[in-house]
Amino acid sequence: MSRTILHLDLDAFYCAVEEIQNPGLRGRPFAVGGRPNERGVVASCSYAARRLGIHSAMPMSRALKLCGNLIIVHGRHRLYEEYSDKVMERLHKLTDQVEQISIDEAFLELTAIHGSPIRLAQDLQAGIRDELQLPCSIGIASNKLVAKIATEVGKKGAKGSGPPFGLTAVPAGEEADFLAPLPATMLWGVGPKTFIRMSELGIQTIGDIAGWPENELVRIFGENGRDLWRHARGMDDRPIVTEYEVKSVSQETTFSTDIRDDKKLENTLRELAVQVGRQLRRNDLAGRTVKLKVRWPDFTTITRQVTLPSATDQDDEIIRSGIKLLRAVRKPNQPVRLIGIGVSGIGPPVRQLSLWETGNEKSRKLQEVVDALQEKFGRGVIHKGEMS
Image (cartoon, one colour):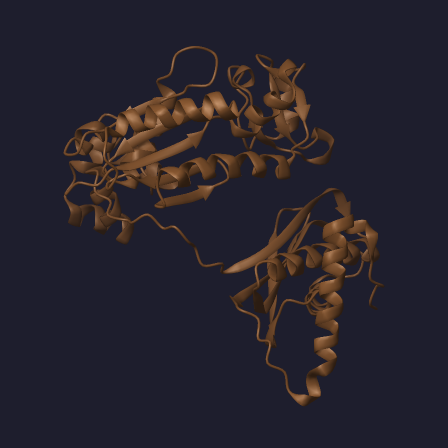
């Protein structure tokens, strides 16, 4: 039996939320992201800004050159998460087979649901629009690959100056015909380098890829060629994944200007490590490997890691390991553009203690008290002393 997969993408999500908070932004060119003098980039931009050539991931300084009166809005991620949760709650009321792949995007399995998939999609789209004031586009197909591409096609083909509100359905059995005329770059697995090689071979569309023998694509592109052959024919048997295993927890920050000061770097690393530790404890997780990430001014990025004797979710251990790694890798007075810290080797924390580990239990209890106070009164209510 053919499956029915729905892909939903919230249109210009960050901007849509900002327009709810400030209706005066509607119809105006604005972007959500960092400040241009702090190496900020565009996280999302309004449709008025897009018509001027501005797009996400563009440096904000470049966006301002394209539109001198561009309004810059500082991102409010907690607010966006609240709106995202409301949307995902609606999806879970429709089916428990929901795979959230980002803050503004999800797949749903509708195979077992009675009724017209198109009617269900229309009702879902209208409900999100009327009750949450958020626009979204939807693609429907027999698998995840074609459903997502259907959403993109609906977005690109929309008329008017506002959100696209696309809704595109691909009937089972017509996947290859639907994909054939589309640009090869719309297919998963076709990045810039792969497309350059394809262009040299005369391949421009997904249909062109489908016309090549599988063994030839494997010879030219390696194992990725096998996936390209299947995907170009609209074949994709991946299931809906309702839960993902957490493999790592990390935090990083890019400085507005390169930092040379040892104390500022270590204090920043300390703050990031505290965020990592809090996230681990909140999810009842711990990890054995602490990884440091550093980017120099020339964009060279290095990582260093250390494996601990046992898994931890404690700030002090993460901080101590991170600072030790930083001191080992960085030369005196060497400027830093970005710094980050993470924990991997994730699993449930081990609570069983021996007679000699009561000190660790006291530290854990103290950490729990600090977490509770900061959760209730804010992060600034209590600070730990710095370690040398």
